[in-house]
Length: 244
Ligand SMILES: Nc1ncnc2c1ncn2[C@@H]1O[C@H](COP(=O)(O)OP(=O)(O)O)[C@@H](O)[C@H]1O
Ligand SMILES: [Mg+2]
Image (tube, rainbow, N blue to C red; front, top):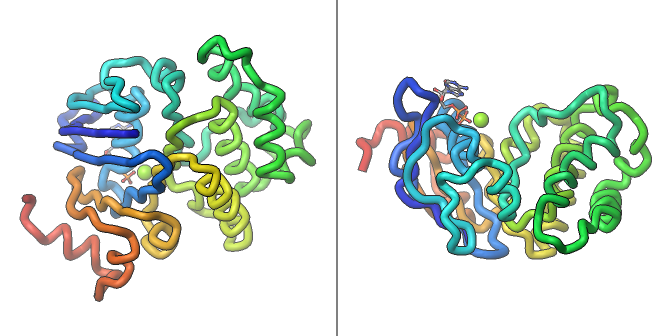
């Protein structure tokens, strides 16, 4: 479904990520782990087409996207929920969601289906239905994260890239968002979960990639990785190993 080969990229002062190979099968949920500053968000930016410098290959369902503009990548079904949510605070929940559907309209001539997407998002996050006319800037952090995920879902993605969706949220709302993501996984949606915390990401995913200093330092089934000893030192230990 998603096939990344020898991906490199950065912001203009030299590459931040180097030679990344990563595959995600259809319906799979994969964790992209690593310490702060490892290059996880940079990797997602390269996938979404918003990174100034990038090279290598990014294929979704066989189609090469490395040199495509970001709207074309969205059109092809790969959508990102950015770190820190980035929402339009003075817009209502409904209008923020509708911005996601603008991309839907730009996709295939399949008649939009905006109403159906609103229903889908409001069923997944009933709180957003209650607050549909409220300004997004007045919502709690957790509710804003729901809007960010909902907005990405409005374009009916085939691959959803989530950048630390639980960051800074209270445990109860983390549970709420996690169960929504569980429902999405059960529906067969392909997902990449970027996360720093192993204890959040490993139970939720099938396989994990660990990024250290811009390189994939480890790939392993999440269940096996979770059983490794000294897990709290994993990033530290991987950073000590010479690059392969
Ligand atoms: N907009 C930017 N411009 C220049 N450098 C950046 C930018 N964003 C991140 N970086 C640098 O890229 C490296 C990786 O950062 P990032 O991808 O945000 O890591 P992570 O998401 O894993 O915490 C860091 O050294 C960071 O300083
Ligand atoms: Mg990041």
